[in-house]
Amino acid sequence: MGFACAATLSHAAAQSRLELTWEAPPECPQGPAVRQKVDALLGNGARKTIQLRATGRIVRNEGRYRLTLTVQEQNRPRNRTIDAETCDDLAGAAAVALGLLLRGESGPAAAGTSPGDSTAANGANDTDGANDANDANARSETDAQGASRTDAKNSTTSSTKNPTAKSTAAATRSETTPQTPADADGVAAPRRWRVLLRAPVVHFDVARLPKPSIGLGAGLGFSYDEWSVGVSGRVYSEQTLWSDLVTPDAGAVAHRAVLEMWVCRGFRSGSVELAPCLSAGLDHIVTRGTGADVQPQSARSSSVLLGVAGAGKFYLANWLAVAASATLGLETARPKITISGLGEVQTLGPVAVSLALGPEWIF
Image (cartoon, rainbow, N blue to C red; front, top):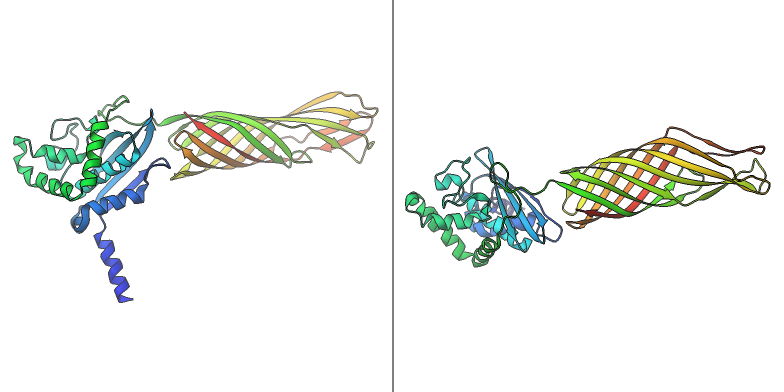
């Protein structure tokens, strides 16, 4: 037991002092893989690293991948944007940049600039996609930064010991081409809103009509960060309602359609997202008499449908997800279906339970 405790403490001490929040498409390396790369680059130097908090986000942008790396430096966030053909290159570049920052060998402080400066030590803007390994090598060529030559020598030695990381960072630098407009600080930020299209969506409803109903629908909406809002509609297959209180061969054929608006707040972890939702809509039912000696007259009824739902998504790609939801709706009206001269056929239920499944296209 003592040996196990000692080994555990030794392993914990060897890990870097890095608080990393990582978000990437399913086909890209995830947070644990990036942390392993950082620890591998640091080696035994992990015990001497500084405390660092960073956030990395990889998004797909016009056939390429874009990494936005945000680092908290002196209580102020600093953003760097890197583009590459593959997200494996971006994960390697992020590991190299974070490793150098943890060793205190790169960043604005080491180059003699303040965290608020928009340029690095070599005069290049932070949004040009170059990573911190290139900044460290550039310092050794700048006569005005002679005081940091020792740091540049250390970073060169670290890159020599890890040729794979060095080649990955170099490949990323050569492929970096910012393609989105820069914000006020010169940092190209990824788009925060998306257009959502859900079609086709299969629905299975119970409780409102006497028998379960199957329907087909579609929806259109948009998302902003974790929030999404949209409108969807669905039409159910017709259902014939019979009653024991009237002539056995007399009844009504019911057609049902629902139009609703929903809003959700998502919580995503990797390729899975869960979200609580609220919805409000209009439940419209048209009935028509059927049977012997029954005139096929029609009647219509509409009621407001208020619901709560739980939704889940599984992202197959950055532009496609499989969405499922379960909704419990409260009807504000319970119309009665009657046949003139024969009596009541059915009274519709006070609630509606709906299950939905379909693809979500993300633009």
